[in-house]
Amino acid sequence: MAIESKVDGGTKRTSDKDLLTRVVDKLAEARSAAESTSEKTLLYFIDMALLEGREALAAVSDSNGGDEPEQQSGSPR
Image (cartoon, rainbow, N blue to C red; front, side, top):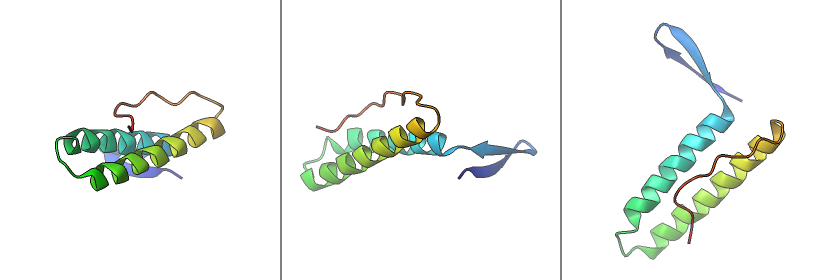
């Protein structure tokens, strides 16, 4: 499944891999911001979401010819 969006008068298709990559990147940013808080529960849920996102990204990459998923920042601790 892909999402289509209108860009500069044309239509751009965004692949599942691109969407997952963007979500994982944003989660990594959120984790970095959350590290300054004392909310361990928040960090836990962000870490679990990052893990799920990375696993989904790896599965999409594997199903698209075995390409290696790009290394993401903000690994769970």
